[in-house]
Length: 110
Length: 117
Image 1 (cartoon, each protein chain N blue to C red):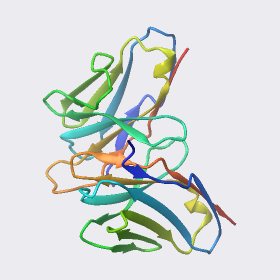
Image 2 (image 1 turned 90 degrees about the vertical axis):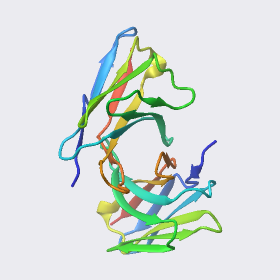
Image 3 (image 1 turned 180 degrees about the horizontal axis):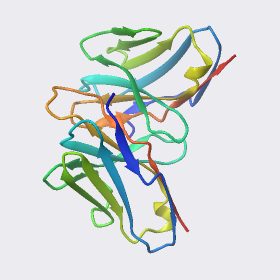
């Protein structure tokens, strides 16, 4: 039973436009949500997070939105750059365990 | 930033061999380290939580005798795949969480690609 789901395995966006990556979860007890970025042959790198008491967190070009009623979070990257091309994992935690989605491969075209 | 080193990055060995993977936190201490397994196009599946100085906590369905975990110090955890078979071939990733913090994201190693012939 997968508690965190990323239903889009891939996304292709033109450079300069907005990339929107989506994630859904099932457990309302999660306290914190995170996005990780992963390049081939490397481990995931922490990107941005959001507490369950907030609905938005912004860091430069990256913004994470949380909709608790819908159990949905999204990552917005604007403007998208070719270097953003990677696999993005969303994760949720109750401070004990982390649960990861299956990832979305983002391709930003020059 | 926090760095986690995982070694080796790739292992190819014969069936029946035992393989040890090391996970080190290089610039911070970690009382808790995590071991994940990733199948192609699937999410990271938590195998076990490694606690310094105590026994690891395994997820349901993960064989304790198959995947031996030792967390001997605040900067090192090892995963030993005993008597590995082809079905154990996978991508194994460790992560570490800094100690003495209310909450910190995990920091990941670069993973180990294990191929059993």
